Length: 140
Image (cartoon, rainbow, N blue to C red; front, side, top):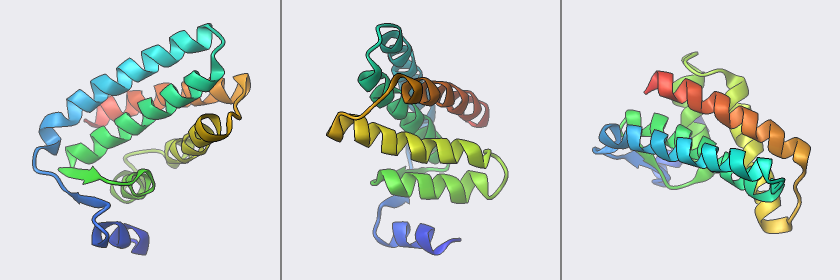
């Protein structure tokens, strides 16, 4: 395990969650709902909300993967660290999807906190959210 992963566990930003496997499919439904709303807001040219909703679709897809392992996150950063450790290093998830999740987090923060967003980045994150959800469904 990586030092970062160990640190997330030590700080209890990732911890055991016995009901996780039971809730993984619920998280996928939330991811689907967020993705559907993101597509609608993109069609309405609301790129700020598209960015935010698409990120949260990816977040819930990633959370479903963590829940499948009976784990829960208390940090968006540690969620990505755990996904890397549990899925990417084992070649179950393409590293590019992890990179997309991390980029989406930055784009979401920029849109949400600094009112910086664009049609191009909203379109990119929307497509990556769709890809991430598809893979997450296969893995759950």
